[in-house]
Image (cartoon, rainbow, N blue to C red; front, side):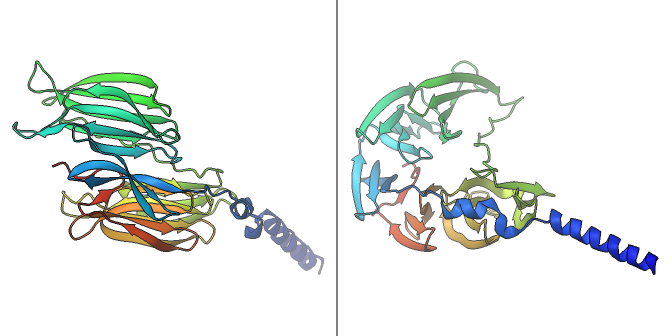
Length: 332
């Protein structure tokens, strides 16, 4: 009898310890933080569109539902626009012409500008020599990087890679040059920004096991499988509301010219995917305040969708006669 009572006592003790170690999901601090999250008030955003057949910069006022032309210059066509992560400033690249008279077309007359919306003024930061490849990206919230690939002027099989890094306010932090031997080293690999795999409050983390993605809750240590493949992951963007995260995934296409993506909107508190965006030709996205903004290709041209996170609905589609996009339009 004593033996039975002892066993019952030990079992109840083990169960009690186990119960005490388990964390109550309702006590997760992420819930409280999300309920009091400060979502930035967004008035509008900048984008690229055609004006009289010239790639130009526009501003869309969400509140007034109006489009305004910001910059258009035939001698300084917009090559690429990169809005700062906070949406308060942007850098842009311009070009004069595309030289198609040579085997590999060159981009001529390249300039790097920074635009300060508060004073509506552009500042010329740098001019670059002709390039066969040109791209830019934000390394993080404070650093912007431009990469230009050009032919070496002496050795035909060599390429020059010029990478310039600027701080948020346009100050040049570094100007790096690297020489590539096409025969020995191959073509320079395109740089990509590091993935932001930890949420702003460090409550959640994106991890992978056997190339499958999971969302880890750092409060209770649980992992939620996403059924998404890590090698297809391009970007992770966390929302101001502290409960949503967006994944940009490369599409599994046998067509190597298909550079489109799928966007996955995940609810961290509900632990599930709440929306999948699969429009053809999705290239770029911005997450500003309560808005997920992305561009995609229509039958004729490209357009921009504005999706509201709080209501989970598309509130506006922007389209111009010759197309519009968040970063760039095809060179002509």
